[in-house]
Length: 495
Ligand SMILES: Nc1ncnc2c1ncn2[C@@H]1O[C@H](COP(=O)(O)OP(=O)(O)OP(=O)(O)O)[C@@H](O)[C@H]1O
Image 1: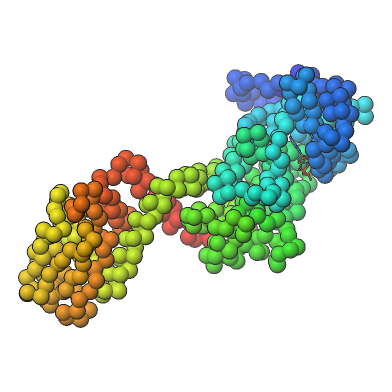
Image 2 (image 1 turned 180 degrees about the vertical axis):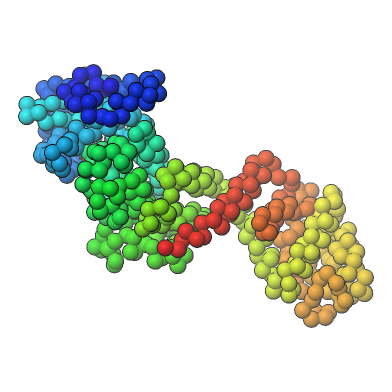
């Protein structure tokens, strides 16, 4: 047990069916013991200046929170003083007791951890928890003069998802039931931490305790499918996380009467369905430079709030997904470089489609160009019509390939007749070849081959001026895996 001494210890130890199972107990034997300290009331009273207004941090539905300076200033903590009890059922514990029960078994850097507790004269329990000096995510999103950047938003989302994953993966699992922005506090390193375990339930869904505890949560975040105790599952937290993610993206409240419709779900989901991802972005920061980030976040949020519990992802999947998004937003330079390359290629494809009738010809002609370029130290000026394509070279005196003034690109190509590979729109019509298909190496005028990576019959051409280094190769693999995931995501956008 984690307590040094606690009145509730024996009660928890005897009513906790998990502790009866010796096999499970053996498994946890090597776990570090969480030391929870019991404070005297007078210690907390003096540490908070008698719960003075200066020490007051905020008020919640169960009581008030005060800043406490303990151990001669060596320990700064937050003291939660319950003002009244909500006793949901005769067997159930108070929110404070519940929080002690849960947090004395789990400690994690993603959570606002329990330091100790105190029992006052009326037998009410006061909680002593880690002090979070930078307010709540609610404050940051809704009342800060400097709204968080996209990088911070993605980091917060990942940190919160990891916190929930810690709860869901503990044995037995813990379901928080009150995931919301005011319960996400920001620590001294500006990391998001999950707090307030007053409503949390620890146990398996078939356990008596969970079966007899009536539904609870906060309006706007509450899973609409959680209507009876038996409906509770870890996916209820996933639903609330989805709402929180929409709040992080849009900067608007879960329920906000300033918007029409007031519910963030009714407001955001139609836009997500129509692919209007920028429409749900917080107007104060605008969309992120890489639009894939917002698309991915929006699709993830939409998946989390699906009405079908089974179709919602597990929180572990959410964590993995957000890690990919974080990678993307945290390496914008390499991604934007990459994006520019792909965009250029796509533009080239579009131009070629306009010029030629079929994609087959396009691929053949690109392939031809890349073969020419694949030979090292070939100068563009030396690329003959024969090298560009026999058909072009042999089609008569009118067919020529010239280099434009900008070194390393093709200028105009006049197509000959009877070309089996390159079909033309109208005989003898000069067409502008896209100049971006050939890239210039550091030694001017030298062609190098574009690298072609195939994926699911798709073709990506990455035009590196030099051999791609390991980082670039890694990024190309990542991009393909992201694209494959995107393909899988498509059906999830429908509801
Ligand atoms: N550990 C902490 N460190 C610093 N401030 C805290 C801490 N815990 C809570 N607070 C502050 O006290 C306020 C009230 O917290 P509390 O957890 O009691 O309620 P809440 O989460 O805001 O609302 P509810 O009780 O309805 O869920 C918070 O909004 C926050 O500003």
